[in-house]
Image (cartoon, rainbow, N blue to C red):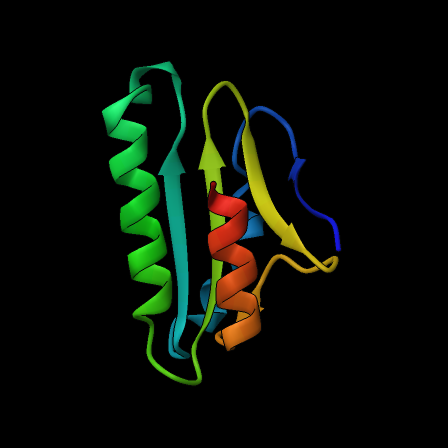
Length: 97
């Protein structure tokens, strides 16, 4: 199974974040992976993100957008919005590494 990020350009398009979903349990994680995040900062960020993902409420959904010189959305099985399931959490945690 291939897990990768897709590049959508240099700027985050506000249309990529669906604000109509705000009343649902949908979480968007925005992660800085720029050059200033090297070393311990990135390791702490990765561990924190994994902890946040596995601590989401049952029935929720989530997405991860990261940015550096460009932004990327996490893609698993062709999707960018993930249901909180054991399988998706494990796939996400593995991709964070």
